[in-house]
Each structure stands twice: as structure tokens, then as C-alpha cells.
Length: 207
Image (cartoon, rainbow, N blue to C red; front, side):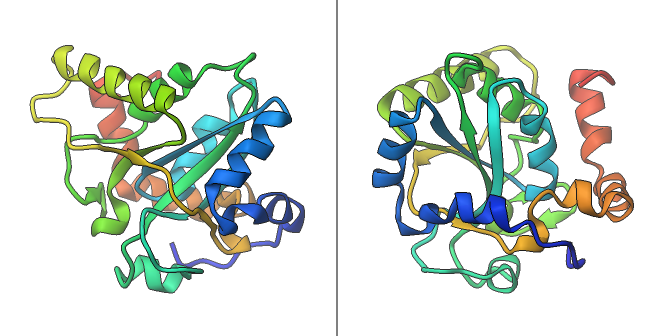
């Protein structure tokens, strides 16, 4: 994942408040008629596209969350030197797309049965998690995980965490929308990761 990209400053500036903590940020977003959702699903490059395709999602930002260290860098997180996970933070309009729909997209783009790993990426920084921003999100996330466990979709137990959201630190500019900026390198990584082969096997080729 260590490829150089192109700067997209407007998106980064829009989310810069995220690095100061989520309590005040969430309130600001709510007054604007939008909400936040935060998910960790392994490589954040691969988690941006499925959410950006949704009507009602206004922005998806790659970043780091789940640790106590401040201002982590990609070099630190990817080397496992922090407790943070690679994650995406989604700004969405709940009148156009529900949190339940976001959860559905999340589950259908990860392997929730592997501990501290997603496909070719290994370490706690690649764990899967739902970082909920309020009690309603927690309840919906727990209900969706329970339903998925009961569905028999997986042979192994689901180990995805459901934990409170904390400070979210935007990743470096070159990581934002990497799949658009570097499509060939992105496709090469994604193909080699085995993510799509797994998703096709579990959910069918139209996932």
C-alpha cells in the first residue's frame, strides 16, 4: 500500500475537525442534517469505493482510529506501532441512506471471522470494527451482527468488534480516494489481496 498519490486538499480540510475528537464534531454534523459512521475493514483503500457509491453519502475519509496515540502516521500504524486501526469515516444523510444500509455494505465487504487480519494484511491495525457514535448506532450494529451470526452465512464465529467511536485522524492525502488516483496500482493490490475472491464465494459474484 506504500504508493504515492495525488493531493486532494479540499476533502482533507473538510474533515480536519475530526482530529480534535468526535463529540463536538458529531454535534456539528447533526446540525447540518448529516451523521457520521465509522468502520474498520482492513485496508482503507478497499473500504472507500462501496460507500462512495451509495446515494446519500456525501464523503468518505480514510484514517486512523481506535488507539490512544495522537496524530498517528501511516508509517506508524501500518507497522503496528500504535493501537489504531485503518478505518473509514462516512458522512451521510440519514434521510437518504440509513445506518442499517451502511452496516449491510460494511458486512458484505469484509471477512468478519478473522482476528486482527484482513486477507493479505495482518496485525491489529487491520482488525474489523464498528465504531458507534451513539446508542442507536450501537443497538443497530449489535442487532445486525446477531442476525448475521444466526444466518449461518459463516462457518466460523464473527469476531468483529462493536466499540465506541473515539478520535479519528485523517490519513495522509495520498491515501484519500486512492482507487481513483492510482487505479492500476489499486486494482493490482486488490486482486492480489484475495478480497474479491472471498466476497464472491460468500455472497456471490454480484457483491
